Image 1 (cartoon, one colour):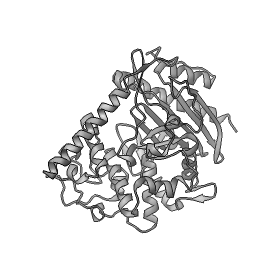
Image 2 (image 1 turned 180 degrees about the horizontal axis):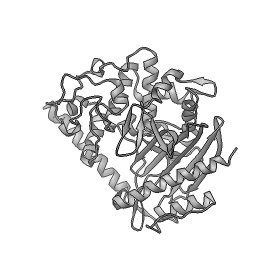
Image 3 (image 1 turned 90 degrees about the vertical axis):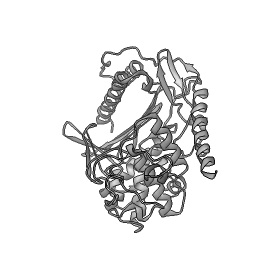
Image 4 (image 1 turned 135 degrees about the vertical axis):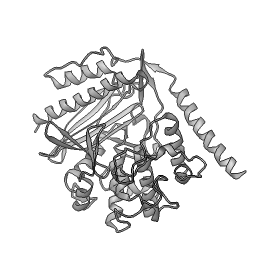
Length: 403
């Protein structure tokens, strides 16, 4: 009976989550920033004009962007409206859903605990979890912290909507054992690949959910409270959290899905897999975090990580063949025409984040945006991602002219 009640609770919670989202997202709003072209992108020597035209071509309601040089923001601009209905323009303190930029925060939190000798990178995580984490195809091979941090644990990439919903509910109830261990109530064998642990790169949100759970086990604090105390507060990130309740909702950019006649407004949300994609932050705040990583763990004379730990995170461990980037420990690397960039991307429903710096001169670019062609098919999504790349190129061009 108790198992039945627990299962019913999870199902009802998932249903309510979906139902609430549909009801709150039922309003389609129109904007000047509508898709006007499907064939290529407008190119102009004027960066602001170019970004604005691209936004209109692909359907992006707002962009919040900055350039970092010499350990500070030297340029900022907000484009469009982060809330179309109320015509709210973004500022450097406007919060956005940052998606997988969360993974860099999670990895930083783990490395802080690593410095306290709470674990070793090659430790079997099962020593610390309340269950044995093993790929059932290789039950005798341990899964380590390093494997999870570098997406080489042999967990698969979760892709279906069903898996996404169930995974988030499992994370909310800390029921990883029931989902990942054979015999569990929601065990799903498709979440494991046929790769040996440590053998291949497979991007896994669930893996970083487990890592955020390990932060709680090792620290004795909730994941959000740990990050607030040991990362956000020391870095003066006062508009940042994994919990909506900590933030002013009206200051959070509305997540939108692009539809034929405008934008479908979604509710402001965060995800239960906090360490994988639940971060909500502003350009101002996350710039402090990037600056700390650019400077061996120090921001404004405050150290959050030893330089040796930063170097471990910033060491390439794997290559993502299908996506063309390299991965360290919660950290991405991009080789573009022989120039190396580091940082992390984030993509979630209705909101996107890009955070990178050029290694050669420690010039950083960050931008957040809302709007998403998820409902419009793969070709529109391909064009959307190409637009994001062009915006990044434009911002780095602008950075070269800013002192």
